[in-house]
Image (cartoon, rainbow, N blue to C red):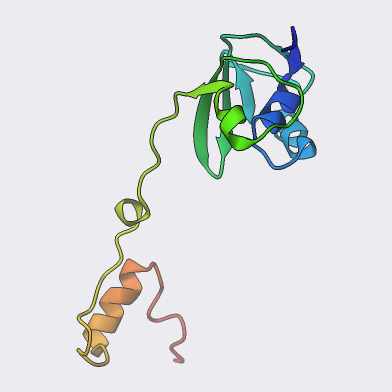
Length: 129
């Protein structure tokens, strides 16, 4: 265990990002915060710090419990932080798609227009006047 580790190195070593260069890029873009403050990649971490970053459109909040500088296996990496992130919403909760009964045939013109309006499409976009 080391005394201080860079935030980009720590994110890579606990397997939160695929490469250290991606962790560095996330820090430079302002997507990583330590204790609520946007940090540079060279920011040193200490045990007890809260690291927040954006991952695939969702916020992750990790509390540092152990400092490591080398990438380790997933079971060991999970012991180095406590995840305080809100649970991700399920895909079917976020996007409710209309469901047609199987075997009901092709949609009528009215049903097609309703489906298009739900999908945000303009039904008159291809109409020639």
